[in-house]
Amino acid sequence: MVDQLASGKAAVRGEEARRQVAELSERERGALALLGEGLSPADAGRRLHMSEATVKTYVSRILAKLGCGNRVQAALLARDAGLWIRSARSQGDHVRAGAARMTAVAVAGQRIPVVAGFAPRAAAGSAAGSAAAFTAAFAAGAAQASPEGSPRERGKALRGRVPRSAHAAFEAPAGRPDAVRAVEESNAGRVPELAPIRVGRMAANPFAFLRGAAGLMAHDLSGGPVTGVGAQICGDAHAANFGLYGDARGRLVIDLNDFDETVFGPWEWDVKRLATSLVLAGRVAGADEDTCRAAALDAVGAYRRTMRLLAKLPALDAWNAIADEELVSHTDARDLLGTLERVSEKARNNTSARFAAKSTEAAPDGGRRFLDALPVLRRVGDGEAAAVAAALGPYLETLPGDRLPLLARYAIHDVAFRVVGTGSVGTRSYVVLLLDHRGEPLVLQVKEARPSVLLPYLPALGFRSPAEEHEGRRVVAGQKRMQVVSDILLGWTTVEGRPFQVRQFRNRKGSVDPAALAVEQIDDYGRMTGALLARAHAHSADPRLLAGYCGKNEELDEAMAAFAVAYADRTEADHADLVAAVRGGRIAAESGV
Image (tube, rainbow, N blue to C red):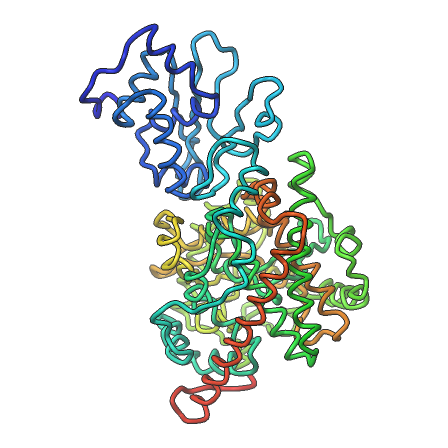
């Protein structure tokens, strides 16, 4: 590509080029590899997990040092200086594998090249050297942050542009839709006859309304302050989207467990949604206002303290930090012990076998088939069942090869449609019954994957997500980036032109209903979920950068708690509008389903 695009001023040759390139830091020489590939700032940002604005700032710095008028001249100068550029795509379709190209740049006479995707080495004794980590040390995602200095220093510097106290403010952007119109618009593309069930569930209480209104909250957050630091975010990190599930050996894991809206975006959005949901859940549970605000404050505080802890650990230790058995003591959530034990016991029995025993019957052919339990579970017609079953063939191609012998031991027996969730109601969701040679069941969920409701609001903030070729792949990739342990059968497929994610159904899943907690447990639950969210974000954002911004004191905690209370008030007003519209006949609702 360099050969095809090169034009304009000839690059300085030989010794002069080597002299100029030698003035660049190792990080800058690593970035030069991306210029050599001809990547645009947007493409480079996606490769480096940083905003386009940061890439442009960094490229401008390199061009200025080299005295080049454009990126092509810089790449040519690098070649003349003796740098070599090698690109290789890992084998396999990038839609299946999501593999990034690996790029290396070696300076003449240098033993170890700079390899994109790894942290660069720094000069001995350099403070930046001890802080170097992640893609290219500068790739922490801050839209305007300087690439120089340690990640912690860069995070701390962000406070000058976005004071932590600024997160207290909530002011809805202009053109905010009213609550009823927002719900109606979010029903577009869903199964029409299920819309009243979704409205009924959202109308149950303000916390339920928030659960179904991730898009409306994203609209409101888009007018607020962001640091520009990006992370793989849940996009819907309310307090009920944390829970238990079984790992490959049947042990229970606690983590985030819903990723329908996951994207690369501003970390603050997840934290604010969690804090707001705790205020609302506490109000529904009957807690006083001080307790509700304390739960939000404690959640943000636990997020901040956990991020500081992760920032101090070796990279591998930080990646796997806070084992579940340490979570209660780490977050001082001992009041939750009894509740977690009860939920764990229930989760251990929440299996495919138990679901199949209750929801299937013997079929004439000797197998089993689903029983209707309307309106939640409905056995589908032959054509629809055939389409869903056939889609499991392409799904196998999205799994690691070592999973295939396992699924080859199961036969597909039946398919049913099942209504799920609150925000997910109306999306197409199937359960597929598989039986092994002994007649033991495995149930897979095949759930429609719609574009994230956050996407329309991200480009204006500098987060330009690539156009997804498959929304199911987006969900699966985001889930694997955020969880410590993920479902071993997680994959994606397409059913009659619509994208779907595929996962195990009822693999020992259990959840805490935050709106049903005892008043004295709400702040404990806030601390626990705040710590889990920090761990999830630290898999894609440098914890040192976020720790530098969040700081040691409670300024951020206080600010986000104030936002949570204000936005909870706004949500209660939205919920009241929806209830009034239901009572007035403006919008149909079916309650109690």
